[in-house]
Amino acid sequence: MPMAFVNPALVGKVLAEDLYSDAGVLLLPRRTVLTAAHVNALRNQRITRVSIAGDLSEGNGEKISAQLLDKGGDRESAFCYLDAMEQTRRLFERVDLGQVPSLHEFCQAFHALAERTEERLGLFRSLYVLEGADSYTYRHSLNVGILCTLIARLLKWDEERVWLMGAAGFLHDIGKTRVPREILLKPGRLTDEEFAEMKRHTVYGYEILQQMEGGHETLAICALLHHERLDGSGYPEGRKDGQIPLECQVVAVADMFDAICSDRVYKQRTSPFEAARVLWKAACDGLLNIEIVSLFVHYIAQLYVGAKARLNSGEEVEVILIHRDEPMRPLIRRHGQFVDLRCHRQLSIEKMLG
Ligand SMILES: [Fe+2]
Image (cartoon, rainbow, N blue to C red; front, side, top):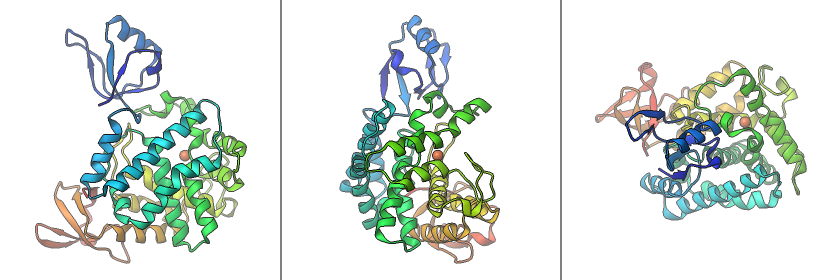
């Protein structure tokens, strides 16, 4: 776990482990978002170093790389992913400091990875076996960019629009750089004021992308409207149906899928099959575009044929066959026997293992 010195730069960072005094008294539980008062208290206790989570700091890159290799990824792909993450971190930090790097610089960070993922679908599969919430913002941006590229291809959009969608997905949450870290990394429920501030990342993103050298109106619009829902229940404007450009509807699907499949400071990830079920329900409830969700869910499920997974019963199984009518409930092999999950509705695929 990365260690950090106790100083004011720790404000907003998240404790990775419970912190005890020399006398064995619990000072702060893990997942505490550190405030200036906490830092002062730690100094008064003469604590000099603490373990933190939520950053691409020293040691974290190796952990992610090891997981990618362990789950069947090749060395070059693991390097490519880490390199993209590191470049993304640097670019986002510049935005954090009030600069706006050009679209060309962002594309340099993202496109090598996007191309590699299209060539090697094994890399895509390994993205959703990664554990830990470290570097979530950078990983989420890269993953949503990859997913948007994939959906644009499934929709048979032309090459220029596919490229634009990759960038739109990659940059959709750039406005979060302006949301205070205490809110962004808060493990518990947000207050109404905190949630209102969190929602503003859409407007901040629009403003940042409007200023970007070489930028494109579609990127700014996707940052602004990716939390809108077709029934009008989204934010920031509560737009409905045709008032939400199709590009934003694509980002909404990719964003929701990746958020469900990734570990966060406040929740553990679940499997792409469970995410597919949630997306399907959201589409049936009139929140997401059903055509996009249907294409996407069928395609994603097929990628996992042959993959190892764990059921909510704790058993390890293999995904054998995806059904056309219910792709989120495939045929699996459990202890050498075939089980159709459509007929065992109490069972679900909880986690992908590789
Ligand atoms: Fe967002």
